[in-house]
Image 1 (cartoon, rainbow, N blue to C red):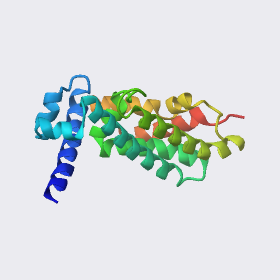
Image 2 (image 1 turned 180 degrees about the horizontal axis):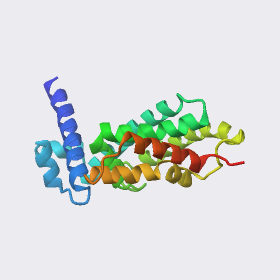
Image 3 (image 1 turned 60 degrees about the vertical axis):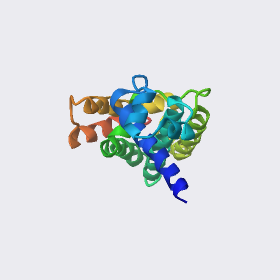
Length: 197
């Protein structure tokens, strides 16, 4: 029983340490040695759980993405009106980044693992499932003439692109967004995505 518990603790410590290192230094600048040092595990323990730094990153990225997407969909589907949903997601995004800054730095600053990399296939499939669910919410509003029929990439850029940029300034210590600015970003997203007569 003790070995099972230790195994779980070792994996958790590696993931938690990787989150700290990746969010502070970036994935490319983080070494395997620094990951082991941060998590306090032996070489044997590390390789018991993960095959490489890239494997740790794939698992961590997938966990962060799932956490964000589940919260995003829970917030979006609370809103039946198009404008309320669009604006609420911008406010949600800013609040989520403020509550989980290390995770948000990884999600915003690092590219997702590619299909051939550890975790890449799972991340890609989860992303497709996520966009399908967003589309299910979007489609009735589009048919009603409220939201534009925009491709997925443009939807993301118009909806959350400005919020992402202000988050980058925030994480760099250059600017802390105010409630008024977040409200302005929310309104701007609505005006970018709504259908105009």
